Amino acid sequence: MVVGLVLVAGLVVIALGAGVLAPYSPIKVDPLAALQAPSTTHIMGTDQYGRDILSRVLLGSRLTLMVGPAAIAISLFFGLLAGVAAGYVGGRVDTVLMRLVDVMLAFPGVLLALGAIAVLGVGLMNVTIAIGIAYVPNFTRLIRATVLSTKQNLYVEASRAMGAPALYVVARHVLPNIMAPVLVLTSSAIAWAILTGAALNFLGLGTQPPTPEWGVDLSEGRSYLGAAWWMTTFPGVGIMLAVLGTNLLGDGLRDVLDPRLKE
Image (cartoon, rainbow, N blue to C red; front, side, top):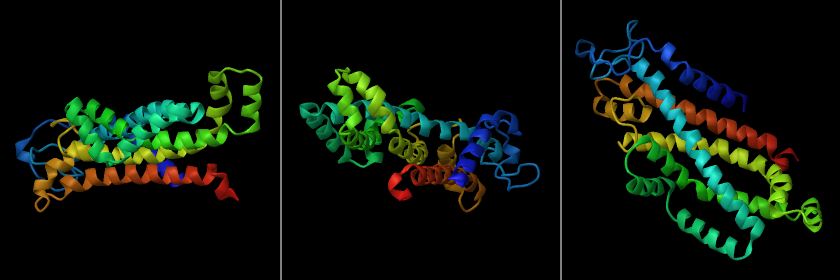
């Protein structure tokens, strides 16, 4: 967890300070400097247009790292609403919501995101929304299962017996006691969202050139793998570190917050 936290914190600091740290403009074209190998002038080399790879990696971290948390925030919001409604209210509400979730889970997450983009259109905001929609079923199922378990506790039944409104019971007793597993899923889901966002940008469905973004840079560098390995290596390492850091952080939080592991 500590390693994951260090990686994530480091990437966030780099993203926030990218404007100061970048030595060159990430979109300025310099044909005379095209496809230069890493050197003291250009630490990570240049691309086919002579743009500095280091500057593009630093500035591109902002968009790549923004997609994951923003998308999962959408998933968490709607998953929380649907999961609490299904688990606490039950009955027909539970049946209808969970059948919708089952239909969504019948499709792979990336395919579901592609379907959403086909409806919403191309663009970074639409990619974020599409990824958020694709992960709603996972949050819904987890939250529903946790609510079903939590609402059987005596303190919840006592509060309901005293005539407390349903919204009060949920806000006061249910939500605080389901946050641990939700927090673990959130941190792990961000890694998936970052990877999926980079993949969709790689396909040209999100951020458009010349805007720096790691998935876009991977797409542009794939034609130069033999001649300019640095064009894809450094954005790829950035994606790897982001996914590794969030996964390690999620695993660490699970170890700390899961009472079964403590036993």
